[in-house]
Amino acid sequence: MENFVASVSRAEAALRDLFEPTPLQRNDHLSAKYGADIWLKREDLTPVRSYKLRGAFNAMRKLVGDAPGSNAHFVCASAGNHAQGVAYACRHFGARGTIFMPVTTPQQKIDKTRTFGGEAIEIVLTGDYFDQTLAAAQAFSADQGAQFLSPFDAPDIIEGQATVGQEMLAQMGRAPDLVVLPVGGGGLAAGVTRYFAEEAPETRFAFAEPLGGASLQAALQSGAPVALPAVDSFVDGAAVARIGALPFEVLRRFRPADVHLAPEDRICITMLEMLNTEGVVLEPAGALALDVLRDLDQIEGKTVICVCSGGNFDFERLPEVRERAQRFAGLKKYFVLRMPQRPGALRDFLQLLGPHDDIARFEYLKKSARNFGSVLIGIETTAPENLTTLKQRLDQAGFAYRDITVDEILSELLV
Image (cartoon, rainbow, N blue to C red; front, side, top):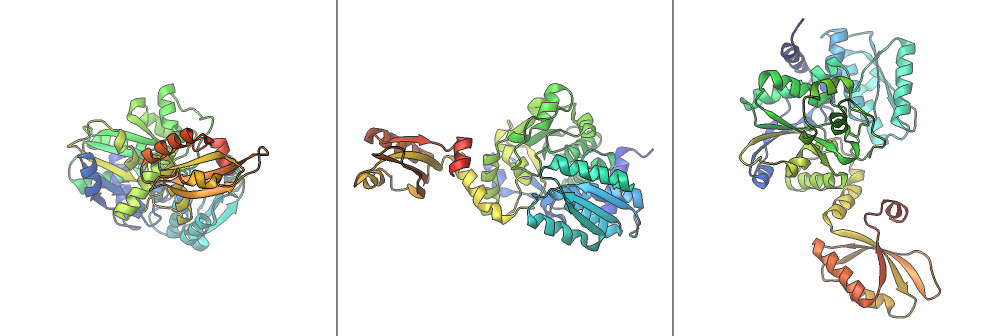
């Protein structure tokens, strides 16, 4: 039986029929910021703008051979990058693909998947939630005798994702001190760490998970994969409730402390920083590894590779990303203000604003009493301390208010 490194080498060579190795680029901005030698493995620059194509291609290659033209039928369930990778590979091999996507999938992702797959694929929209979509896809696959392609929990998928690691070592020409990997279902992390364990065992690893989807950390703490009770779907490319069983068998040797959790709103700051400073478009999952650099100890002077796992970002989400980034940075707050119903009350409030405070939202809600009315007000500023000072002035002036910026329920209802 072919060993893992040899299998990965064969997969990597076959991938060249689709695309050249993605760039490994030194990033001067991040290197200066963290006092380290920071390199980015740009998986956002594959033909489908994520690494998922690697695993899908490798799994199909094992079943239909390297030559295009096949009667094989592949099925997957995905709302994003895996769907696009499967679609692209189906078209390459001339294979039939049926891709199940939730009804709630944004039209942009549906259109991109259809573009990549062309006439080779059929898209089935079913289920309001991914678990429903997955169940429908698996039932269809069994009924049709088709091959179901897991996004991460299959040996050939893991092997395909491991080609990221082979390319990194070949491009750098030496072993880096540290590799930072984003984790969703664990296929990429399992593949790369297993490859490095044989080819560069001295390299250390750090893993990045979204705070609202820390399935690897939960599994390491429990000693086995566990299902998270709830998942924040904002980092949709890595928001997985349960780490894959096969990936976990590879990753179980690591410690919970090796996993670093990125708050969803803080990831937005990293996305905007890369967009505005470097002109690099990353989706939330693609920015995970970069976001946790600030949490890593003793990386000064070290050579660090961060995997930018995907760049499928819908710019219609940009206002939301900016909003979340401002809130996390303390540059924007929302208040419900109890405003006296008298002439001049609004003027009195406006005079309390500082020179850098800007009203971004102003809305009367309803009269809560005959002499007072409630106002929803959003304030943007240039430094967090400005809002602290504004609160102090409001207190001194006797205004009654409530800061609802981090109140999830009220913010969702009112903002």
